Length: 92
Image (cartoon, rainbow, N blue to C red; front, top):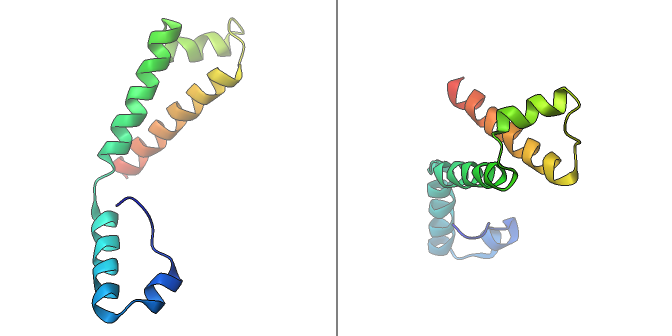
């Protein structure tokens, strides 16, 4: 589903249209997040390729003070944390 539906749109829609909008929302909610997970993984691989280092090694170098945390590195770390949370949510 490309866009959300406002409450006003639902309230003002004729019954048949309202039913279609709600069905579309339910279908979108039931979809697997795999597309998002795949995009996240691709972004992480892109960082690893550009920096020519694995994510694990980058984090180790940060912890050891061998690498500075730049805005780019912070963005990479954010993606790693999101991936970690997705994994934890999937396991739980």
